[in-house]
Image 1 (cartoon, rainbow, N blue to C red):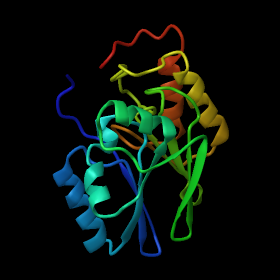
Image 2 (cartoon, helix red, strand yellow; image 1 turned 45 degrees about the vertical axis):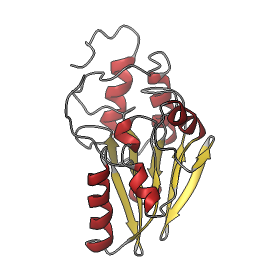
Image 3 (cartoon, rainbow, N blue to C red; image 1 turned 180 degrees about the vertical axis):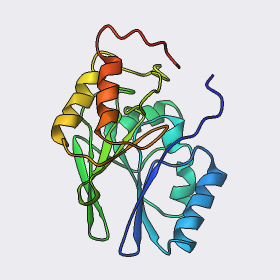
Length: 201
């Protein structure tokens, strides 16, 4: 229903290791990405973190599994992926999961429902980076796909993220331009009670 649109992911790299956040939607592009990381960045992919159960997060997951790369996701994401007959992430967690790549720590946390009932965010403290996925909107974006959203909790969840990480320098939304704290503020305002912006604007 939305046609073709760009999706964001993230790659954390340190000491010859890489962690990928979300897969491309298609297997062929997932294979191209992994080849690029291995051949151009000269890194070994240690894992992939899935933000939520939609296709723009795990559409190319089978390719990662074929190459022996472990995948991590909220336990609820795994439940939804099973219901959707999608490729299922291998390792689930509840609350928060800390991973590492090289000497970099990565905190993957479920703060609450928003764009979906399982969406997480991934924080890299050393670089002050947050991969927010589709729960976080670029400034000027519309509300987008609300099929699995919790509109009441969405602004509350993002407010929790803002309180936990008050000094973020780089925030990567699921779609659109990277920004700073203004992305959290814009998302909170958009989904606050009484907002009249149309879906998909």
